Image (tube, helix red, strand yellow):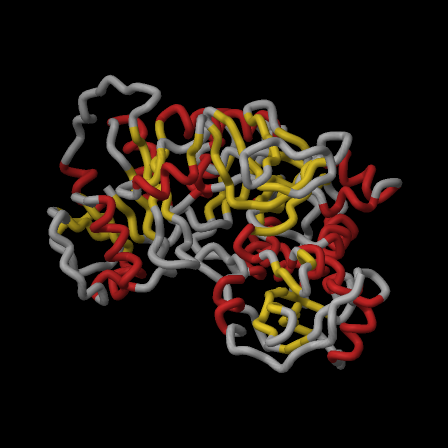
Length: 464
């Protein structure tokens, strides 16, 4: 069963129903292209497809054959033969309960597809319950919370629509995110907690009318899903005046967040340890984390390696992708593909994706380090750092910047020279109106990277 819809109550109803009757649910992000939608439907072998009226045109635009689909059910004002509300009215008897097991598949969560077609992570009953309950408890969710759901429920965020089932709280659904709508709902529904990706947090803080809204009900703002700059964290703390948390997890573990940077950690960072703002926290109780080298051996404290995770939240594997599953799940460990390091106190620091590390003149440069430095500039709204081909040094550091004022390349370089090693300072700075974003709001670094693959003139030698 699959849903193609904005985040409406029908999406939540069908998700909870599938968990109960042993069906496998696949969410289709309405922002996907028709080719990606067709791939998900066919890859998952979808039989029943529920389509909201606002997404009907997207469904009609799919030109690929969909041989497994036997029923399309419309929601709202639509032209399909079957209607969601009518089916509910005419089928009063609940389905017979089925025996469920921990390893049974309950959902297929597809990646955003920044490289190639989306991959379906197979979530089990165990992985969903482990991820949902442990994350909720360790985040300190309360019965009197009013949680605002803002992220596309086609993927991992479907779990955040379910916390109220476990603790009796309230969930407010945003069918489609906008900064102004978020502020309006916080005020009207007295929202107490919210989870945003960094771009959403940035857009809300940048709303020119933010000071006219009453956001005093907020007690917890959670951010995660992509690297966040210390400058943005400081801005959020100053503006909202509530508790702040950061979560780090992945689709491959049902969003079962591996680490949390709690509010106390943020306070410590602002008071005494500013470097903690670049950390994603310490492992959660249901996750074991190691940082390993290319041979799979754990690296010493402070050294960079690949982050690997053990948890009951980890997926069964990728659907129909045996080789990718074998490469990702090895000896009981999830290999995340993320590079990171741990300090002596157990805090984990994300460095970057393995595939985006820049090697310039034999020096390793991690884009997140450079992005964090540039983002501290008051005239920088967003930045994405990639490696570009260089005739002499292999790769050169390039910063792609969204600016908010009269900012020059020389300004950026000078700013970086005071904060970074010489080999980390960008050799090229480009200014753009906006960075490309994927279906979940993340910056598509792969797309930026691919735009800059033409060789450039040789740059001066990076120096230590």
